[in-house]
Length: 312
Image 1 (cartoon, rainbow, N blue to C red):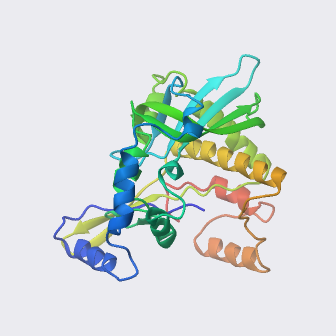
Image 2: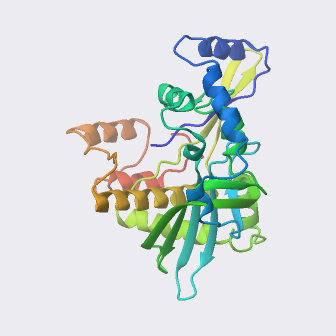
Image 3: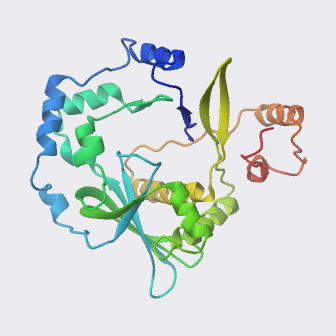
């Protein structure tokens, strides 16, 4: 499911910022990590060597790169893209192996279970793990050896998945990029492989999504702008590079689902069929918003015609 991005640019002393701080002070929102959990995180961050299972596969020779919003420190995904000699593509996709820093049954593990997920507010976030891990020792920062779950996904010339390999490994990102820089490099033709392959593979995966009737919601990023008379919302439509990057994340998730289905294990979440009358109600809403939705056009096909840069 897409997460709606919402940011606020108001000054620290602005009433909205104060209201958000008050909201985070609620008893059900964790403020700090328990001393025992923080101590475990501090100790784990000082590990001189990765676990033996991770060190067994040294993939630091792969010149991986990350794509994240500017200023991000919690880098949990990195990639390396290449053409296969016989045709098609090879996607190396690394996911930060935070679990290698967490002792099962320990205080840090218990605190992560209590928090469940990272909470995102317009001005800051409440992390799932202590920053010494999430933004430090476990983050796929450039020029640092890091434990990761490394996926090797081989695609054919049409972008369809043909083989999957996954293992714990040691990886090293070479460069940290942001979406705007990636889009600019690709648009101006200055991007070289492997970065240039992000568009090529991303578009192929988008075509396959269309063929299977899939839906990707291009949800604009929202920014709360402070004005003398109150607040207003500004919107930024997602760039194509956002979608291409999301396609590789989706590809990895689908590969994981295939492995779980084949082994008869794991937990999969699927979207239920729309209840009776839901599409009809949506059509009425679209008509009220002035959106042309021909009778023969499916919901998935309609979504792909909508421009996220234009509000209805």
